Image (cartoon, rainbow, N blue to C red; front, top):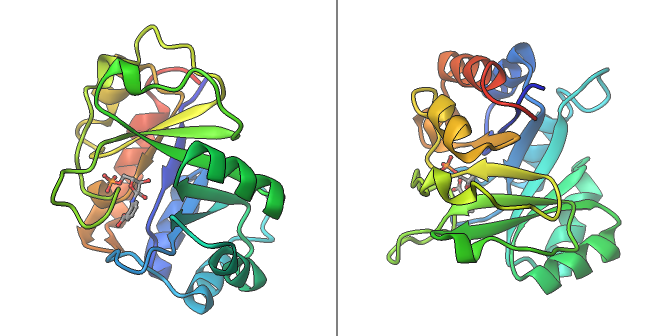
Length: 213
Ligand SMILES: O=C(O)c1ccccc1N[C@@H]1O[C@H](COP(=O)(O)O)[C@@H](O)[C@H]1O
């Protein structure tokens, strides 16, 4: 089976078009205001409307860090988000999923096997490197985790590997981790928030031809 690919932190049309042309499974829009990839709901709707409504379109993922219900509701009023990717607690993520009737992906910071969840109430776990202590955001820092930490782990739901991936390391990351899907943001950019279409193409092509799903 092919590996699923999410490209996250899109801020401009060329990046979205590259994701569509090269067949990303999910496109992520970042609603964390301190991120260089932050987009307003209005801007996110413009980007999402390039693909929502198309046949065989990628899923539209909205990324939030410790959001209030009001923040999420305001985005959902404007943007056709299919999936909520959340940086919050497991309990809060489950409650948000119920409240908004959306698929929820929970980001889990991992540096060792003991960090890997054995149960969950969300639809997918984003297994991600732990942010450096001085970081001002919990993801998108280009940091990798020890990929073989997931060997022998029985995930309670589908999962996706994130953190510091790029076209040059994604094959090894999939091989060592056994990840069924991969997520990238900074590793396919030419500058923060601006995707490099050639890097997007290479990342998707290499990930697709690696591993199993
Ligand atoms: O990209 C960001 O700025 C960001 C901000 C706050 C939370 C998460 C963020 N990014 C997500 O982190 C992972 C890994 O990113 P990277 O490939 O290491 O740059 C991915 O899901 C990003 O969308």
